[in-house]
Image (cartoon, rainbow, N blue to C red; front, side, top):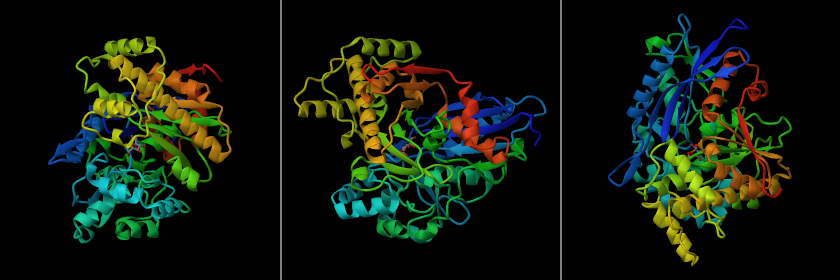
Length: 480
Ligand code: LFR
């Protein structure tokens, strides 16, 4: 490839509430990333269970790729495609890659019994944490697969492989059945000490070891796209398949490791990059999940419930905002309110997937004999302030357990536009927060494609070049 030529790539970034396909254009120094296609996503509830609609997602991916190709200048071609998605969800397939079991959505309640049973078993909790570095979370792939195997034992014969969602779309694009490491690390089945599966964790959950292959690292070429003639010769690249890993790769972090990362969307994902995992009793109590970077190193992470609280409560209000103007008005009204004197406990498990978020929040407040907020603006203020506290608690736990001192919080994602949330986080953490308007996951996805193609040397080089081109807003803490 010529050094100064422009490289085009397509980043497919699927979120639980929306998906997008972006056309990456890299001229050797700058990245532009026009959006080719955006579409809503939601799990579908059927017979009391929640499922993803895989054919619908694939259809939107193909529409998006076609639109991305249409954005190309005459004579140009797309060199590569890469897929990232939310974590933990997966497709059980036969040897030919055909799905043999429905793909449940991670918020489905089928794991609740297993989750509670494990939560009561301190010995297994500690053992599994030592094995995998991942705490007991209701959506873990481990709990999902354990439930599948117990409910349908014959699945062990019918299914040959377990592909996480990015792995599955990579298969549809390339014909290769491969597992990728970042998405594998969300499962609670990967061995925290190596880069492959934990036989003991698989055994604990009754999951057949044959379902998995040693994961490839992020930024691995899988082969040419097949079946889509407008993408002839494009390479499918297994980028870090977990959207959070991609979002972190996009952060223009200081090279000395002094930045804490916050990817803020439906979930608030706080963490940092590290050569070692954080393990032990205290790390488990702080719910630190030792997920992986594309190169196999660690990304200790605390998952705070995030803007799911706000998204959830909107459904309970007819006055919810319908466009950007109404959103701005809501944030302004919330901003004008006094700081709440009491905050929500955002770790309350009843916020996971309640029928009504307002009822779940009110129940917690009433239990504590406090007055419930009077309108949507007051709930918004309370939620943002409580999330700010949750972010600061996560920062404290990381500092305590790693011995590091963070100097800044770097924030990307939808929440980085919410100034009450940004300020509440800076104030509670006592650190400046730098918010970037950046499609984090899609940028990280593209960066990894460019690295795999050999047109960008490595991630530090990409980050150093990216930072010069970014718009950033810094929120100083009220009290440092
Ligand atoms: C964000 C995310 C989180 C993960 C959650 C469930 O999209 O990937 O990192 O914990 O979804 O998979």
